[in-house]
Length: 210
Image (cartoon, helix red, strand yellow):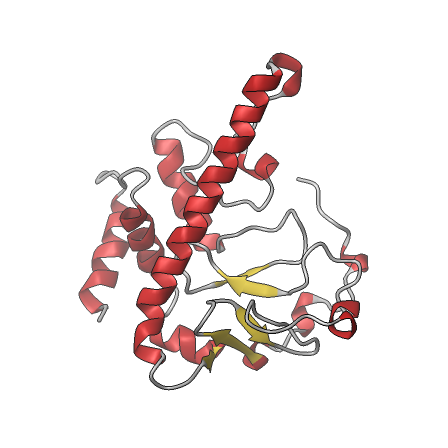
């Protein structure tokens, strides 16, 4: 999978201060951070602020997972994932059970999802239709992310306009069970009962969820 060389990034991931990040309870994206200031969708973007992100496809370091909306994902490039490692695992396991590469298009670039036909063997109409379908599936995931974020954020909105990332994950901790439950409720395809490890994790999660 193509990716930008790490030398293009001015701040190695291991030097990020996760304690400095906050979740905006309005737009559902991460803000603040250190050593570089990340801005959510609600905050203005100035030329001075954009300067620190030169050399990156995306002006940010981290965001919330598009599916469980609990764990974080690294951004920065067009080849970055939209979902956390655990949600990608669930999507792959369930997808393979039904004979697919993965159940959901969790890559930022369509090539990462393997759902764009090869132009060498397809007509222009088929390629265009595949790209439209890929974009629609990604839009549906973004819509889900907003609905799920609103559900998780509602109890916190009476407190402040944003909360530290650590507090967000304390209230809504990432786990395999949470990822399976989010996938199941998203509803693209049911989690087979014979995938016992996934079902057990979901059952344990639901037994302790508020």
